[in-house]
Every structure is written in structure tokens, then in C-alpha cells.
Image (cartoon, rainbow, N blue to C red; front, side):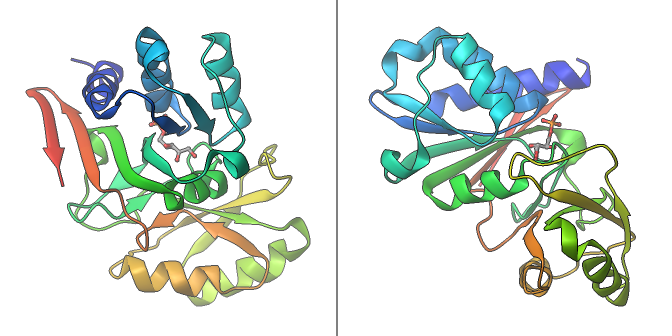
Amino acid sequence: MNQDEMKRAAAEAALEYVEPGMIVGIGTGSTANHFIDLLATVKGKIDGTVASSVASEDRLKSHGIPVMDFNTAGELSLYVDGADESTKFLHLIKGGGGALTREKIVAAGSEKFVCIADDTKLVDVLGEFPLPIEVIPMAQSMVAREIVKLGGTPELRTGFTTDNGNIILDVRNMEILNPVEMETTINQIAGVVTVGIFAHRPADVLILGSESGVKVLT
Ligand code: 5RP
């Protein structure tokens, strides 16, 4: 099985969490795209979806899956999304696709967060994947200086603007030993919209596609 097949296998396993009448929160990225394509096969069963990005909204609509406004949807029963890294405690790094802020909002407003990934994403310590931070453009240099003080090496994601009109700093050389504390610290820097650490609201279930089948961590 190649990496993409492992992502699809994880997405297929997540379909089991979809129940009749649910409004399902939908993440962003190649693994979430597999889930969207599979969700199309059971679209008559759900009441609708809430998308975490314009890209996912477009893909959902292309399948004829109804997309609702988060403000009118109420609390969601389920959120399904990928990740760039996860620990066995289900603390995540997300934002490789730049949708971290809306992803964090939808995850926070969902009763259950099912994370889907291939097993290369499972790590002992978060931080090998460059940590994405969404930043208000005028604060770019100041936030970068604060990140250097924390030991990181920030780099502007060139040619990229988030769905919210902001920039992304990707931060290398971060060994995130205490994800909850680091999430708080970075989120408190003025100008930071969201850091891509998901530790205050981790995943509830992690489904990993692997060579030997699908593994589920809770
Ligand atoms: C997007 C994300 C994605 O979930 C993450 O980048 C994983 O992507 P993929 O499923 O393509 O490996 O956080 O902002």
C-alpha cells in the first residue's frame, strides 16, 4: 500500500463514525479529500456538512453534498480531518494546507474529533514537521522575532494567503515537549491568529492507515 492508499483506508474507516441526521465538520487536505469523496456515497444519510476551507467547500459542493454555515449549524457531532503529525496522546500539528484556524474552530465546536492519517504521521515528539502559524500580515516581523526567542526558525510561506487573508509562518527546529503549554505561549503573541498545535483540543480518535491495515488510537 502506498501512502495515498493508507490515507484512503483511514478515511474509509472514519465513515463508520457517520450517523444518520448528523451535520459533519470536514477538514482540509488530501486525506480529508478522500473522506469527502467517500462521504458522497452516503450523502443522503446526513443533514449536511460544515467546511474548514474554501477548497473543501468546493469539493463537497462538487459532489452535491450540502454545506452549511458554522454559525447556524450549532454544535457538530463529528469532525473528521487529517494531520501533519500526531503523538499517541492525540496532540497534533496541523496547518500544512494552511487551513489551521478554521480547522481549529470547527474542531472546537465538535463533540467528537476523528483524525485520519497514514502511520508515517505518528511521532514521539511534535515538531519535526515545520509548525504552521497563521499571522496578521502587519505583525510578521514581530511574531518572527518572538518565535526565534522560543528557539524556532520561522520562514514565511511564500505566495500563500489563508482563507482569512493572513500569512503563514512555518517554524522549524521546534521540539515541542509540552504541546499544551507551547500552544498557549504562541497563541498569546500579539498578531498570532492561530498556532497549528492542537493540544488543548486534541483528537478524540486517531485512525492510522498502515501497511498492515488500519489502527485506531483513542
Ligand atoms: C490542512 C491540514 C491537513 O490536515 C494536514 O496538512 C494533512 O494533510 P494531508 O491529509 O494532505 O496529508 O492541517 O491545514
